[in-house]
Length: 556
Image (tube, rainbow, N blue to C red):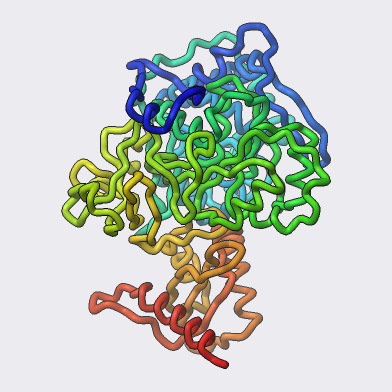
């Protein structure tokens, strides 16, 4: 997106989508740059600080071989391929190979526990999984429950394990043994490419199925939030895991679409000082930093110690506020651009300091190419004159960035729409200049440290603990994480709700589900507020928590 001499209004007025009928993500982001020039694609830095560089030529050759390895293992076009790894060369190769073979990538967060991966692998019917030794151990516990999963590839073993009951293949052995000759699948823009599971408030997490066109749909939002990307771009990095749509489609793949190199380095535990050091050492020019990362970096003293090469910083997931943007201008020496979206329809609203000053309290303006509206209960767009009127933040279909639907769940897909509009589930307003303000969530999704977390999976995990009779989960306000996961638990007879049991239940959820989803606070209660049909009224729990805060504030 060239911003030279442009205004937001001119960009929006003149924008036109160019989505080809035949399109493949892997060919676009890798093969087109593999011209023998040795163009840098990836810098991978390990935990010890050792850096390895990969060119697009190398990525093409390696991903071609692994695509052939998948085909040799019996995987076919349209089959789902689980990728259970953090940022790494193997993660990148697995994605490229799946896309180029016409298969469907299913990214999985490396910290997921066995319950989380069992649901996602089982629901998607994944036939193969690429992981590491930690992932193999988790999968071994549930492999009997995953009849479709025929092949597990481990990136950190030198040869196949030889176990006929639970075979594990060496990723690199399979790759190196495969043919180097490969012809990418001729995929259409609407052909399935990736399933990213998103948290919901009822039932288990749903798989948002996207076509290959989703990358092209992301580009205007990424380009706007990154100050006219790829202008002045030399190296992009994010601490966000590539298993999430923010890491994968806001950083890795858009960068490669434009031929910009990506730095792969994910901290086991995010550290603000280490982030400053990493960006300075590698001269990172562009980054996506979730709000919680920014808040942790704000606590680092004397950030001027580092000589940064930043040209743009984007952030999304929750509102930043005037203080954080002001800090960014001093410490990062850029204006942080805030953007908004969700897994089903991402980066549709954004700020862009190169085009207009941020309006504090607003999440930005509609990205050119996307029709973002405030709609009423009947799906009618509120008139522009209805300034400040609260409604549902919605996006008009069709839209290239919009999902194809929830995997295997047509009913949930229908419920996501109101007329021609996809509902984000969030409430908002729009001012006279088109700035959209987030008012609140229309559902019970918890926003914690940049993650959108649905309570249903946590409640289900809690109920698997032998001491728990009933459980309800809400988000409780937190100054650093925006919200923390709070659980209200009714115990079975004979159990005592002491600190030891709190820690035991927390460990249960943390290891069985995911480390970022465990309840940081647990309250033992005698009963839960229920509807006549037995559904927990989470709203009542949130209101009670808010009243506690009001009562506490009112005390002298």
